[in-house]
Length: 175
Image 1: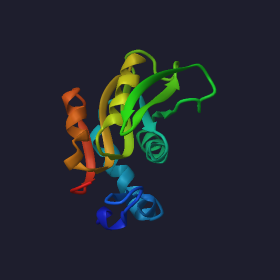
Image 2: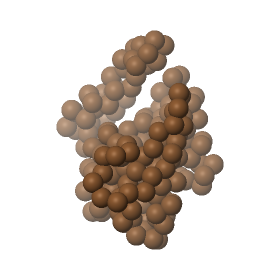
Image 3: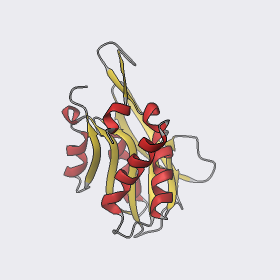
Image 4: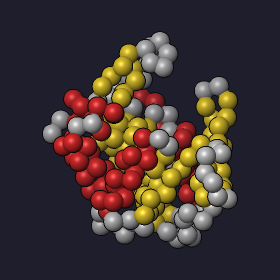
């Protein structure tokens, strides 16, 4: 199945010159969604994953489905202030400032093998912060998987430099 044909490109969103890669069209296609979940999970199926961590918000959809496919638990990584229990956080740099992501401090036991999932990797800032958060909790990152890679922005290389194996289903050149 050609998953790339199921990704909608929206020009000039969120600002002029950006080509936004929208996976909601892929998520709405039953066979495409199933294939994407199988594709994200496949390289990690024999790696004794204990949990899948997904980054807000599309990473929740994909991560929850990958966790179900692998028979593991799911850990949400959210924007600051969105989780009800005691949390740990990690700062990361945005284009015009700093933001924070959090997870429950008891979500990952020390030594637990975790797979990180999100829809897209661009510069890698959010994914790097999520990886640091998982490691801060004592978790071991087995790898990171994304539906889309924007290789020109270097995010996957950034994670690989941290020793994190990356798996991507599709690549779109440019920004």
